[in-house]
Length: 629
Image 1 (cartoon, rainbow, N blue to C red):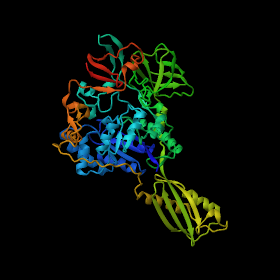
Image 2: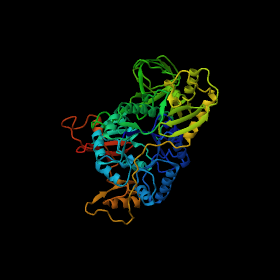
Image 3: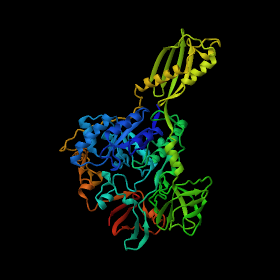
Image 4: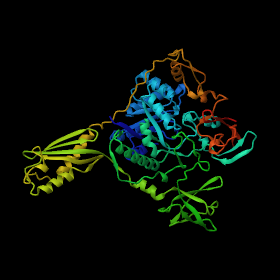
């Protein structure tokens, strides 16, 4: 049996989700009204239902995010939302708080649960824990090597999902408390202030400044398009694109690009198939270099560190187009020496360049050849490297030239005695529709032309179906094998078109047959005062488990944990790690003891607006930590 590969796209709202499906997504993840980990990306249950109806036409899936931590006074409302998503037609719900899994088991809410990336699953042991709670899919931590992914695959039987494109948190997902510490806005509650994108000075413990005014915690964007085959072979089922706050043009472009890449994998390896139906054709040619990015990295996929940080800019830089070769005195006209052939500039394009420690942007009002006229840009200088972060022509193409997604339908036509027409349509997902019609008693004077008309009119698109005649027979024999003088009924195009439209209506009346998705049912029998299932092997759950309510605490106790501390948002423990990461400032700046013999991994300080943070180095585990200064 072929293994499904799923491209999972983000959606801030229903219309973006529909665009993602039309561009080739097998699934879309979207937030409901609350608790969706993106405070600015909420949607009504009615809108989620509308998106489900569109996606299910292609057997595609809709996953709803319910992945913040919950306080005791919120769990009841969250359970009502879970039921609402099930009733709206959602195919799964993405969860962080274990109170949701416990309630789903207790109340028999029948919908698959996926363990969010906020659960920070990065070991086989953690994966087994979440599978034991009934999670059907695990969304793995981004900072994993492919070898670790293979180990997790061997340890569990549930589905595995992995991010392959988009913005990166510098911290292990779900375990960043910097925003909560600085501003009282919890990343685990969808309120992150993105302090990792701020600029910092870096100092040693004696106060000597090593680096000034750099985005020392800001990472480049992830791009693993060329590594998806390896990930599939390692056991990844779902390839996830980050971006629930991104624009519709971003989602269209990235989804189409990755869908084409996934199609190529499936065509080259018959072990795999796509997780939904419908061929996408036509439309714009995708180019992820032209959409929002801070530069790209493949992060830790090979188990090695390299240049991960976007130290100079947290803004989108886009594609490098060239270097300023001429600049007039008023700095409102420049010429560039193109970085490569084929660059075409357009009026309204957006450009950026680095001036010292600042990223400066400007708009090209008039662009002709390699010349750009704009409003005066005082920071511009000859020799500046220019990037285009908005290709106006490409944006118009994304808006106006959408691809088309259609379900393939094979049509078999049989003509029997008395010119009775039997038409059977079979969609690629296995639905059938049958029509029997009397074609009249007039014999077509030009048989070959009539056969061509039949083939033409019943091999067209109607709705989201692409019909094609797969067989045409007379009295049970193929038209190719009977005498050339065999009579064929004369049928007008309107008659054949009406048959095609009726077939489409009949297929619409039957739901598209979705490919099966793993559905493990949460199975926990707990109470608030329940004793652990196993007293012989005690473990400790501290603030990093993000336990924010009594029910989640009961789940951990039931699984053999002692509760040493509730969520950081509740207790604000003074000695807490605000962040832990595989990213290392010392390595990024060439100051790692493994890079230069004789160096010691002594702590460093990050300084921003008078606030200090201590950067520690756990060299045994090759991880960096951030704590309060």
